[in-house]
Amino acid sequence: MTSSEIDKRVKIGREYEQLAAKFYKDNNFTILESNWQDSHREIDLIVQKDNLVIFVEVKSASSKKYGHPVERVDKRKQDNLIKAAQKYLQEKEIKNIDLRFDVVTFLDGQLEHFPNAFGVE
Image (tube, rainbow, N blue to C red; front, top):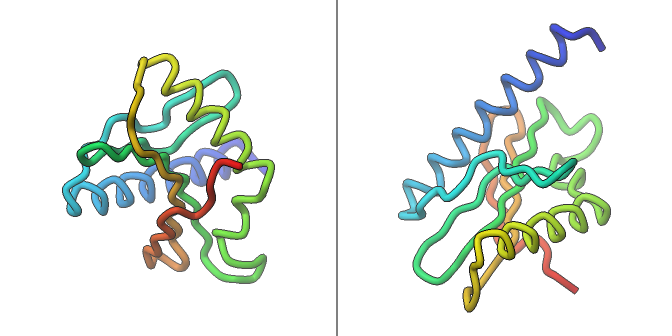
């Protein structure tokens, strides 16, 4: 993959992350963070409403040729998101909250929301 192809994919990914953020804002959530990073781990969005903090992974695809985008949030990705979320909560000294992991996908540009897509075991 060339650097211009990578740049294009990153740009498209950021646009979908902005659309996901708009979805949460439209549903009365506050955006706490976008693209929060902990070493090699990244959380696309962190949003909050009242006592609920949601860690959001955004995935997109132009077709189901390689499966639905939600399927790309595999166990390894989930574990990385959970570890990053734990680090975020520790760093920000956030306690006594409810938390959830959501996946927002865009398949051929259509938003799909998967609330509570996975949990901490």
